[in-house]
Structure formats: structure tokens, C-alpha cells
Image (tube, rainbow, N blue to C red; front, side, top):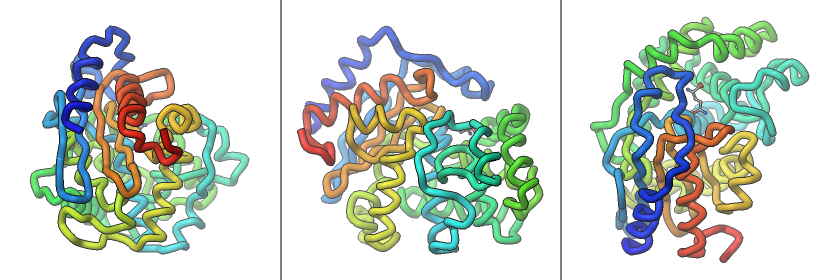
Length: 306
Ligand SMILES: NC(=O)CC[C@H](N)C(=O)O
């Protein structure tokens, strides 16, 4: 495994087409695109890593997997009255389908859906309390109390919130959001600003590898059925309108973020986190996807076989 990761990191270092760093969040535009990291955590407690696997990056939309897990824990199936679970085939920040579907977002991984989920888990609480809960959960699954928000990234997004604010106000006009729009957005931007390394992220994904149990800590996080369902959603919706392409090339549940990270789950085998800040036109990490494609080719870890 270590050999495979070293080879992938070496290949990626040679790449010249590295994609484009997200610049609509000015704080992310400063990130050096010449970075690449990969880490694999396995249920037997092993961790393999190569490249910039200890560098912290903004997990952005990968956080939507964690808030979905919290939301299902709090509301159970009632969460599905707030958000659907079908692939959108649209960009992550699209407003189009919201009107047709009366303000109920298609799935929890597009921005509108994640905003609806965070509104649901706030349940009358102040943003600070909800953020404390989200951070506590991420630290718990990653078994790492050093994980924190990057307040500069959150502030940068708040300053350039127009698109997400439009989505939120539009949903609110259908009576879909319970809380004040700015409070919901502030909470959403902070959840997206969580900074983690590939190693931390790979460990955080372990509970989805083993039917809800994190074998690193030995603790059951969710039940097996819920774990299976979250993985299905990641497979179908985790890369927005690039989800089909990711399934075709990699064949694993995965969730990307515009910080350039991708968390990928190989059920029963391991949790793989990759990071490279340059994005493709859809907003998914260009080298991250490429590295994962190489990884499944070498390991045969795709759920569809070699
Ligand atoms: N795809 C993403 O990672 C988008 C998340 C980002 N915080 C946004 O709302 O635009």
C-alpha cells in the first residue's frame, strides 16, 4: 500500500495540468496549487500516507457528509422532509431546480441541500451551539481534538455570500428554512471552513468503511443501515454534476469540496482522503480524481471490482 501511494504522489508531482484553484472564495485563491496529498486509513488501525498528507486544507463541502450524519441522528427519517435524495445533475450552487421543487433541495450535498440540513439541525439553537456540536462530532470521528474552524475562510465566504444567500432566501420564501438566513449561512460557512489534513480526514471516514463502527476508536457512530445509505448518497450525489463521471472512473462513494479535497470510502477496505487544490470545471479536484482512479486501478478497491 505504501508503495502504491508513493507512486501516485510521484506521478501527481509530474502533472502540469493541475486545474484551477477556487477563487470565488478569495481566501482559497491564495492556496498553492502545486500541492498533493493522499492518506488511507484501514479498519485494522493502519494509516498510509504520501505527499502533503499533513497539510491542513479547507474541507468545504466534504463537511456536508458530517452534517448529514448529525442531521439523520437528530431527526431520523424526518430529515427527508427538508431535503431529497436524488442526484441533481446540476452545479453545486444552482438555483434552477429549487423553483420546480418548491424550495426542497434535491439532495443534502448540493449547497441548497446542505443549507437546509444545517437549518434543520439548529433546532432553535444559536449558531455557536450548533457549530460546537458539529466540531465536537468531527473531532470525535477523527479522534483528534486539534481540528478547528478556519475563521478567515468563513469570513471570506460571508463577504461573498451572494449566491448562497440567494439560495437560502429562495428556500425561506417557500417556508423551508426556520431560522434567520444570516444565522444559517454563518453556520454553513463555518462548517465548510473546517481545516483538516488528509490523514485526519481519512480517519474521520472510517466509520463509513465498517458499517457505522469506527474501528480506530472501537466506537459505533451510526447503525449499519444508515452507514450504507450515506455511502449510497455519496456515490450518487457526492460530486454534483460530476457524480456520474466519478462513479465511472473510480466506482466508490466519494465527497468532494472546492478546497480540493475528496473523501472516498471503500466499504470494508478503507477510507481514502486526497487533496490537491486545483479544480476541474465542475469544482472537483482535478488531480484528486486522477489519483483515485490510479488508486482503484492498483488496489481493485472499487465496489465494482477491477
Ligand atoms: N462545492 C463546495 O465545496 C462548495 C462549498 C462552498 N462553501 C460554497 O458554499 O460555495
